[in-house]
Image (cartoon, rainbow, N blue to C red; front, side):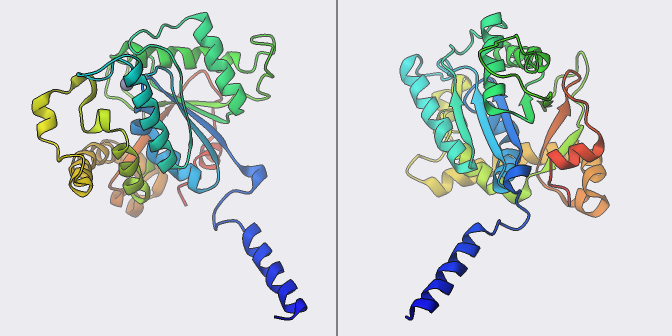
Length: 302
Ligand SMILES: [Zn+2]
C-alpha cells in the first residue's frame, strides 16, 4: 500500500470512529441519570429497560442500591450474601451498560437519618444528575419507603451550597421521579412518563438473569419447593425461558395498566402496540418540567 493510500485509509478510519451512532447524543447533550433502589435488584427491576435505552443513546446512567441486601435470602445472610448480591448487581448493570454501586448499609435497617441524607445528596452531586429516580415514600417495605424519603429530602438540598459544603452543589435542580408501584394510599401511582421497553426487553431479561439469588431463588420469600420449580442453573436457556414468561406478564401488565399514557406519549398506533413498559411519576419537590422538557430528558418517543 502506498503511503498516500495509507493516510486516506487512516483518515477514513478516524472519521468512522468519531461518527456518533445514529440518534445518539453528542458529549454536550449527554444526560446524567441516577436511579436509586433499596436492594440490589430494585433499580434493575423498576427501571432497567429505561436505563438501558438511555445508555444505548450514550447518556450516563448509574444504578444505586442503598442497602447491601444482606438479609434478602431465605437460606443465607450476612457478609457472604452482601458480597454475592453486589456481584450480581454489578453483572446485571454491566449487561444494561450502566454504572453500578451498592452501599454497605444493612438490609432491613435503613433509616431516614441526617447521615444517610448526606450520603444521598453526595451521590446525586457526584453524578451531577439531571434525572433522579427512586421509590415512592409510602411503599410497604421500610427500606423502599426510606429510600423514597431520603431522595425526596435530597431534592432541595442538592442545590443548597452550605449543605455538605465539601462537594459543589448542583447548579440547577434535577428532575426527580418515582418508579411505579401499586399502592393506593395516600394516592395511587400517577404515570407521568411511560416508556416502551420492547426493544430492550431481552437485554433486561439478560440483566435479571444475573440476579439469581432473587430471580431464581426467590430472595427472602423463597423456599426449597419454589426453587425446585425453576430449571437448574446448568440449563441457561430453560432458565431464561422461565424468566421470560414471568416478566412478560409483569412488564406486559405495566403496559396494559398505563395504556392511556402510552397512547399520549407515542400516539394511537404505536401506543396501542407497546407490549412492555416502565412508568415514572414526577415528584413534586424537584424541577417541574414542561412536556417539551420531558421529551428532551426521555428522548424515546419519536
Ligand atoms: Zn427491594
